[in-house]
Length: 231
Ligand SMILES: *[C@@H]1O[C@H](CO)[C@@H](O)[C@H](O)[C@H]1NC(C)=O
Ligand SMILES: *[C@@H]1O[C@H](CO)[C@@H](O)[C@H](O)[C@H]1NC(C)=O
Ligand SMILES: [Cu+2]
Image 1: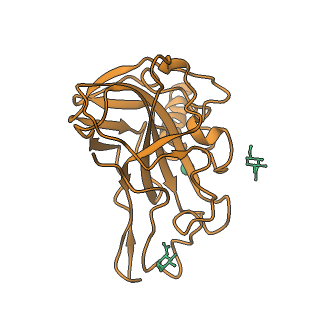
Image 2 (image 1 turned 135 degrees about the vertical axis):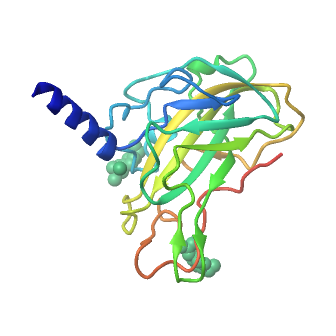
């Protein structure tokens, strides 16, 4: 009897709990949860962030005050960020990165200031009002190639999966956030940008954040934030 209850609770939480992004994927290997990613306030399926101006909007670790171990990744290789389940809400993904200042200890660096560039994005597919699709939906991870021009150094890698199922009013979009810690090796001489501050990058009223995705079906979709820096 107790076993049945435990199994049902486990099934229910995997099916209905909010999701998190606790792992990186480096050289094809998924890291253990919250080892190379700062443990977030919602590590135990608490609510995602909805206030784009909140201090929690950066790494969502204001209560856990978490830091993580930094993992080495070579420039030019593929980096992934893994969900604890799948990205089951409709929505889009942005990944931002920020390089810690020379001499700073990444584990204690807070990522304040205009230091973030967009490293990767997964948007929406529209066809002029007939349908709108969300390529990130249903995925267990996102992957992208770190440009060879990315300078060597220590970076925060911030996942931002924006769930848009309730985004028709201000504060309705849900932001599933976490920050990993990587050390880029063998990098190049590029200048990542444009740089933005987080929080600060959004007002919450961008057409890609304040949006009714159901009716009328949007004819187009504008990814929030700056363009991706691709090296
Ligand atoms: C959002 O966060 C900012 C900064 O902490 C705060 O001033 C504001 O009241 C918050 N807004 C809501 C709706 O909670
Ligand atoms: C679609 O494009 C129009 C014209 O550029 C723009 O005003 C509108 O905000 C866009 N809608 C979305 C949801 O991005
Ligand atoms: Cu949810």
